[in-house]
Image (tube, rainbow, N blue to C red; front, side, top):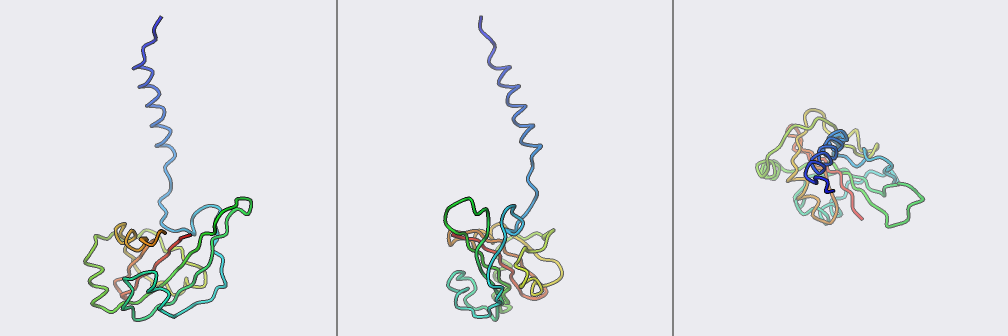
Length: 163
């Protein structure tokens, strides 16, 4: 006796899709929001631009920056390479900021950047703008980045992770 396969596939597909819809992940752009990870480092705030420009070529003409870096602490029972992070608040000249702003479509972010505690006071107040395309451009160094823009202060806030 043959069982009809098509009705069984329809039922299985419906159950699978319903299960996926019920487990929607919360919208989160920041590595600090990832479960099981914590940013560790010295807490030192740096202002030298050369290391940032080496990693992010779009910052070549930055006016100033304050940034911090370190490693992500996860589960000590899981061996493997360390993941590193950089958080930076960077002020660009008006022309450079305007060019970057005009290059992508942006939306207003519903959340604040998840920067290291020592850097939190440097994040500009007010609305911050985000763009997936801009994030991808700043993550081209085999890592990932979340970039926030502040029109009021010509500022980029960058949170990056990489190995």
